[in-house]
Length: 299
View 1 (cartoon, rainbow, N blue to C red):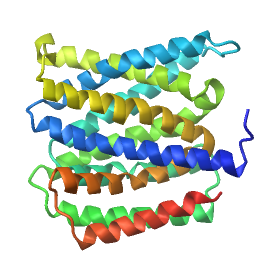
View 2: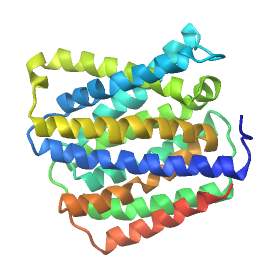
View 3: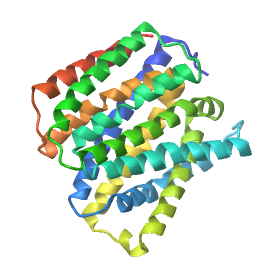
View 4: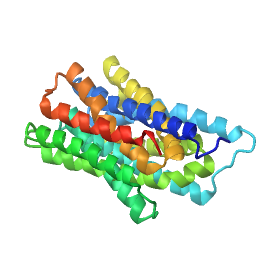
């Protein structure tokens, strides 16, 4: 077992958080491209979960068969399932539905208010100490996000407020997942925890889909299915394990703040692939966010 307080252990966690954030950031782009083909949010989310669920099930079975593996108790199974409901069903649905009304850039900016919730909840509920370096990183990253948000909000249509509220709700839901997942990750490991949480969220998504849709709605075009597969593997399967391991190594507060770099990845790709606007407000915001995230390179 690696020493949890070594610089190398911390830096690996930080790297996983950054890469995981980047892969998550691609999700908004894939969703927008899929929406352009005519699919709705609930159907796309169902496809995403149905594609990724077998991988999570395989990983879970493999992990539980390993020697000396600690199987979660029944109460912990229930708690992890509820965290899956909060973090990857409710948060995902609210986020995806919000993208119907706002741009990928604005969605990413609004979504990454969740480190504020997570950091403050860590302080209020778990009594975690927040260092001056973390506070400064938080202020810098969210000053950058605010600059971009205020600029992009002016470009939104009549439904921009609804879209923003949906994504803010997603951010709040995800912050609870990030905050309360750490103890279970430390106890059972990131792979077992993530697999259970994602399988639970897949179950809730499928129930939601069949309440509101018919089975034939899953028979989408090859292009929509391809985008759903990219969301499932590149922007769900890989980053969920990375983020869970990052939380174990560097904690929920720092993992959340690293997530504030997500808008940078999304903005670059949105400008390139979706032809969304880019100007000085975006550049200033990116600079502040990068500066803030760079402060997390040391403990």
